[in-house]
Image (cartoon, rainbow, N blue to C red):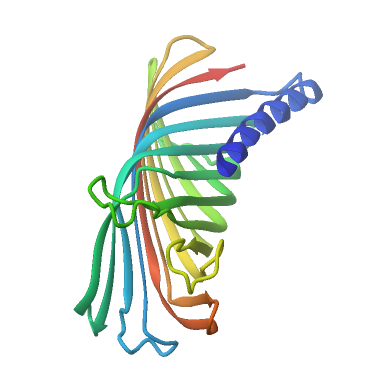
Length: 301
């Protein structure tokens, strides 16, 4: 709910920002508002070692969330500051409808000798992205119009471990894992238009600071509401393909596809216990993929 509030706030801020700029630069302004709705799928996994040296074993505990799916809502607002410079505000929010998860612990290196292996439901939670960018239009390359973007981006999710329908032993299970990736992004866009049809492809990447916190609510020796934290540095890249039809000078219809992939380096796991204080071990890293398809409108004024 918190990030749904952030997304709604971003949408309101974009509209207010564009309205103010329209008043200040009415003679030369150019705006677009592009809402969209679609469906998204997400996967995330992470693991920790047995100690800070990364041994005992090298993978002690591993969590995998697979096929986390739900409706995806997006909004983009663009303001033309100068003939070749735009300000772009964009956000996406995905509400989880279904998904599954697996928690496995090992006694041996390289995921051998498992002593705990459980599967869970994961049909609650969310995924979000928002970014603020400056976009500069480069000289045309024949029929292709290239643009370069520099900006700030934040993304994250809230994932759950919930009991399966036939799991009566863990009916009170409500474990959560929340992530946030913060970083700067650079991207290249290539646009092509033919009569009323157009296509846009983009690729972006950036360096990110990864922070996560968890609440393991059924383990008595773990503190709540924060049982442990993860921190690491990561890299993210994403691609977008957008196909559009310009109905008239004000309105276009768009079909979009988006793919996002991110991973972290090794970092730190800090476990907060009631009996033994704070225990630290090596965070082996996290991996995230998210892809979505959507249908939307683009309104220019």
